Length: 335
Ligand SMILES: Nc1ncnc2c1ncn2[C@@H]1O[C@H](COP(=O)(O)OP(=O)(O)OP(=O)(O)O)[C@@H](O)[C@H]1O
Ligand SMILES: [Mg+2]
Image 1 (tube, rainbow, N blue to C red):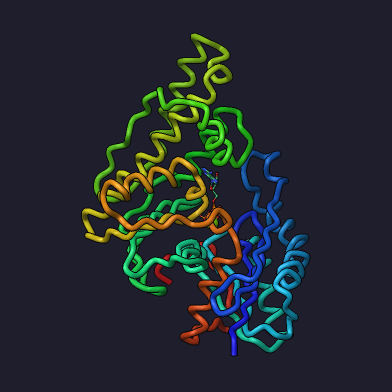
Image 2: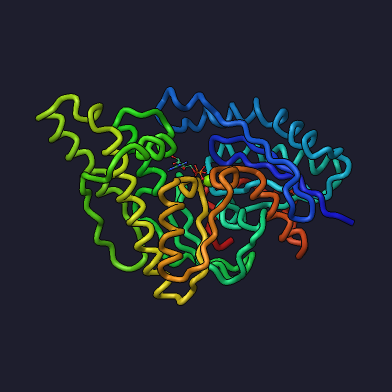
């Protein structure tokens, strides 16, 4: 008999539901929240209220697109953390209520593991072990993935995440939130002609806060001499910032390959939607004979498909959540 999982993702500002049969995605619906644009970032209270509004319609849509009756479901999966407490609470409470009503088990999923295991939603799937460069709005991690359940962080940011570096730069440039996709788009018509420094951080850790400061000082200085400097040079500034963020990421990845000897590499998380990062990874893979895995766009930013796929592998080994499971906003990657 097949395993049919309804998955819920509500860790930040995207409400998503997916139906996954035997690890294959049948539907993956996402309602993004536009309200945060007004504030230049995610407002937790606004996010949890919007999840309340979107969740039931998104679940209905996911079941409808998959052509599945809820009575046919084998389990309900949900993101337990990390994420915003109020946002997680909406998804967790909904999953618990639905599981109870249908008399089916619950499966709790770690959001960061799900970003990595999104690679198992499609072919070709990476073989173990592989290295994941997980780059998102809240995290920047280098992870050795030995198995579906055995993951070790070997490097991470000591301050801002890569997605935050894009979004905070966007704020300095007067761009809407989230600025990552806009910078990607604008950079396509620019040249990386402004040299921003690469931080000197020991080992496999990352730092992006110094870059943000150097961009701020650079812009202040240029604007003093030429008040419309940003407007006149927007594409080149975006290309320069993007080039620096990406070279920081790829240089550390290269160092991690050298250190671990693992030449199978995968991108994960929202920033893996960045076109220059995707191209840069492919170029380095070709030059260094790595086997590279780049996720489909729909599985880069937050989505419930990745939660459902992760839950499927937990289902197979009987790892279910207790009925009194609670959200865990700071859930560790190792749990
Ligand atoms: N094309 C792109 N180029 C650069 N950054 C991008 C692109 N598309 C999305 N991003 C960035 O990805 C981030 C969102 O990713 P994601 O949804 O995975 O993060 P999150 O869920 O908020 O954080 P986390 O997964 O760490 O909890 C934002 O910072 C956004 O700017
Ligand atoms: Mg995420």
